[in-house]
Image (cartoon, rainbow, N blue to C red; front, side, top):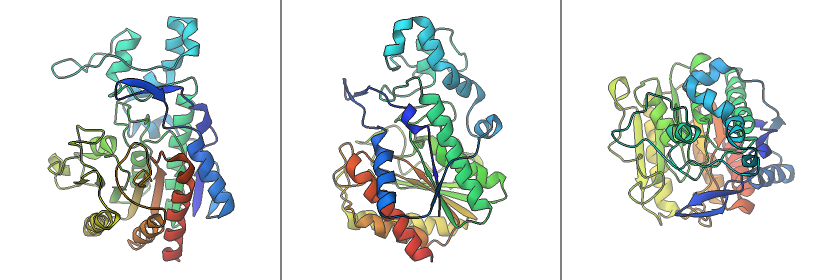
Length: 348
């Protein structure tokens, strides 16, 4: 397995996020990847390498050009407002909700920030764009490795990506790594690609990007949006639209779901992938389904992630993993490596 590591991930190191009405220390921190790298040193799986460059054209195959331009220049625009802003994180505070216009990009920075975001929990800092772009490069490089004949690859990166849409960020995500991997596979010759999201939180960005397409199946098992973030997408009746009708499957589960029920639902998801008959698979790998995760509510234990990897390998598909959530930081490395070991053991 190729493991493509983001050398710039630490440059996204924010101070605080808005969580349930108050500023708290960020849950999404550089330590998340540090623990994965330490676990890989203790239990080596695959070959670690850095990413190849990603082009603007590859990013624009998934994300809107004006959104990318905003992300690339956001920090400079923020500091230009007031040099003292260099000591502060960027957090949005105003949004264009129902009935407001989205087609016009305002001149005011706070308004542009709100136009391109959907929550106040995803701070930006000086290194956010560099980290996110390098993460996108990891995803594209991992997909290229699979296209070149490697059976599997992991984009080991942060910030995560599956909440980022074509022109919005949120949920700690700025560029959608799973979608970029899927699009790279498509552009490289895979006629049909499935994206299977096993993060606790619904991959609303990935769903939005592919919702009207029939060449990419999106499947997600996640906390019920009636009570769980991101709240406003992820319901079972969201099946796609237009050409994509029937190519989106949401499997919401209640907070407190047991491992047994979760794995039964995973089987349902896997069967949907098999019916689609894809040429390749992208797994949006969140390990925040762990029973000790501070912002989630399922009851998987560490050993269950070996079983998850084995079940994914049974699909028998060239597979790209993208690193998503997992906020019980000290355990994240154990769980990610368990998935990889379970996958590799079955795939041999």
